[in-house]
Length: 416
Image (cartoon, rainbow, N blue to C red; front, top):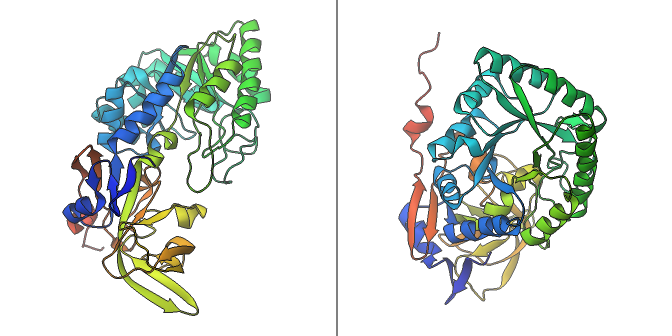
């Protein structure tokens, strides 16, 4: 996380002291480095520069409008999985012709929204979805561009909740049935079949699973062409991992080299959908120490951030480095870092060696730019927290802290 470093023992995001931003907006809060996002996007885009391609940022990783507007300004397309994400991308200025709509459970209303806006492509995940796409295309008197997500039955070595490319997962069409489903799609009115894609999972730190999946899909592309079905778009999905702890994931240039080599001779425009790999290490969660506690032979640091702010440690057992905002030579304790939510599962770290902390000290939970705020909630009627963007020596609140009125606005105090 090169845009987060200590200077004179104080943690900085670019040229801004983390403590200054936290003082301005309060804690807990998310802080993002704009330069880190820009650099990472350009690494992907440049890595594929020698082949026809489109980087479609996966909106689900971090959907803040300022993040989306920044990526649009850099030339990104977008990969979306809901009507809400489509509306976010459009609100941020996205060109509908650079939006790919993925997801296994698109509703009729979401499909109509995508059709009316003329998005680049729907990635269909079943033959029944093709029937709905065709029906809506005919009803709206439109021609809809369609790709088919194919499940290559490749195991990604990642958390079980993150793997999506095996035959027993809910995603995509089984590889052995793909040709028949493509032939059906070609016969359906209102559809223009232009693409095939796969997505085998997330937080993948080796290239072998990607290459194996693409080799299988490449054979399918050749078989389809023999059947008279010409594929123009090859969607590589996303899933490239980042360093949370001691992982050494491939760099975008290595990923691109492997994918371009495996796609050689297919004569397709490559669509790629990085999300976490662009924003994950561009963000931190800043928390304030409320108190420390020693109980049952364990030491706890109780902070004002909780599982409703960052659920990854509780949900996935995910590891995030934790840094004190002030570098210190204090002796270290073995501690659990926990939040105020009334759950034993409310923790940000367990059995972690951290310096002795005291009330009002600040901690930075690192690598929190992806699947942080987007998975947050109002559990325990806690207010969702602000997001801050830093560029050089300036910073801006890109989402204010919620007020109590915000979270009860849709409710009624009148029972039957």
